[in-house]
Picture (cartoon, rainbow, N blue to C red):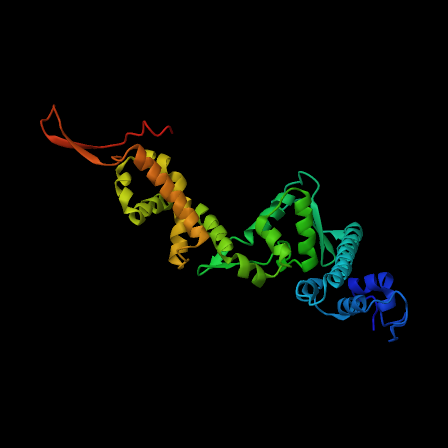
Length: 329
């Protein structure tokens, strides 16, 4: 057996060697259980992490968080787990730093063939070093959470734009910490990191949040005409204020332009059958109603067509009430 085939094995060979069953030649040996420092719970923890093909996080979620042992045993298990994780992250970073020094660089300019404005973020992938602006890598990360298919959020793989191949797990971890250090913190990438980069786990807990994020991205791609049309649809959904659509477009945009995106999100949430007590649904509906009721209180006649007799032609003509003097805009 290869005793140093993983970071876990390297760590336990030097930190908890008394619990390892293999000698320097990879031959199986018995553990000395008569040692006064031997602890059976430490032994079980080390054996699992040393031999398990699963990630350490799997052990934490399924054996520490759901442990049937008492608090002291759980604390010892968690201590070993945290030490192993800290070593894995530190050692993998060290290996990556060495590769950055010795491997051949692929590019000396950014994705738009401009010189780097500041120190680039370098990633060693397939034995080549790729350099990125932190901002362009941040936008690549953000774009992975902006798409949906048939109203279902789709989390895309973060790919290397030079090879069109997905970055590996250790690359994602490195990218997360590097962007965090440079102040480019992505909300959903942080949640993705905390869920061990599991799409299913992230979707199970934050599907509605991801969908709302997709809707925001989709809304910003609409033309001005489509956004205005969306606003007109809002007054069909809230008919009490339907007369507001009669005012001039410029004034209409000034009063209600900031409701276009909330209504777009609200309408699509209703379309997919979100529950009436959904927190998101209530949030956006309340925001819309608050603004409409505010304008209505200030001028209940806004948008009403008022007939009056013209002194010049002696005919009846109408004008639209557009008085906003009490709104302090």
